[in-house]
Image (cartoon, rainbow, N blue to C red; front, side, top):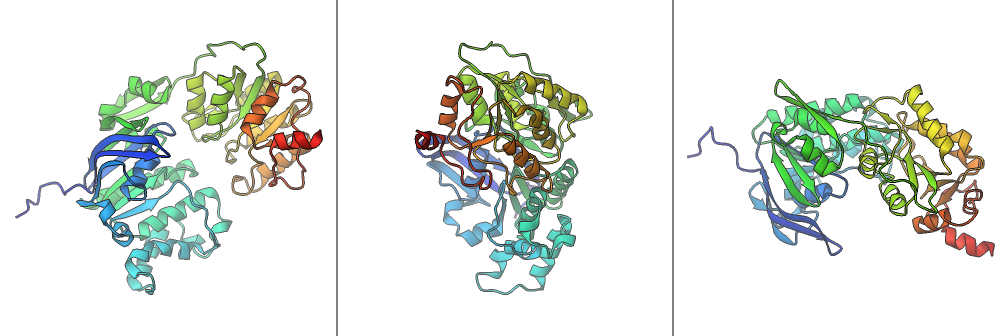
Length: 454
């Protein structure tokens, strides 16, 4: 006889799990379990293995060692329908292939219940309607998903996961693209989900440590694919661990059982410019500049950054690399004072690079600030001009980008060629050969353009 007070069996278990991708170890001997009625947050820098962990939990990524068990059963022995009945998956992003209505897209979550050729019944319809209401999408139910903003599409994916009716939710950065209001509302809903039944559980990756502190029962800290800590926010949130895992100097405030994290201002650059270096200003955000920032610093250039919000993944990278740039509080608009500081940095730059970032109302000012400085200064769009899939400003960002191109900004796809161009004599006055303004999507390799020009 089962004790009614005993905790439910683990919803998910990792037993000494290793995962390799392209011959590289991504997860190392990972062991943990998640019980019913619990919310587990996974935190760690980009590339630490958070997404791989979640995909492994669903059997979407094979393990090279160890075992993953879903509701007591090896996940690799469950067929896709059985997995879907146990766990629902919300990826970081998903590009719809067709312009289905929001309701039809959310209805896809019912596939494990209706089967391949089954018809939706009353129970399925009720589940879809509840999910639409929970995600506050009922007014959008007949709108095509291709006509939604990035934040609205994220809520559609969330509603699809809810409609699935699985007792375990696995969510990969579910609050990405959401404004601060919807972030808190979604986290409140997830909190209610796990508290409504001891059979339910939520596992999510999240970059915002304060959201993890406020809502998670436990936090799993990943660094280099290894678990460096696992426990409650009160136990695991420390200034030393934040510095060790993320490389940032942050304070931790504790009051009334709650924990809050507040980053401190980054230190000034520790290293001066090296011979032949350039003053390169990078406009980035959301992880779009991580590789570029690292590459420029490694090559000895004097790097600055456009305005970034605290705890943005690119801000964390700048903190680690001691790259200066204006800062704003999370989720806040860029103030005029911060914009003035950004323009001062732009005026001292020799080269401007715009990373392939998502542009919304919160960072559009960075592109606007660059407009007066493009003439006479090499300016590059790295790997493409932001198109509709990266413009969340109702077209304003696209207009600014078009103006930047008219003033001389060019597109470069090949990062290696860009690095070479930076150190060529005369590069400060002549950028890589520009591409036609009328067809920004047909970017060409700068090396090939140089050959054509000979």
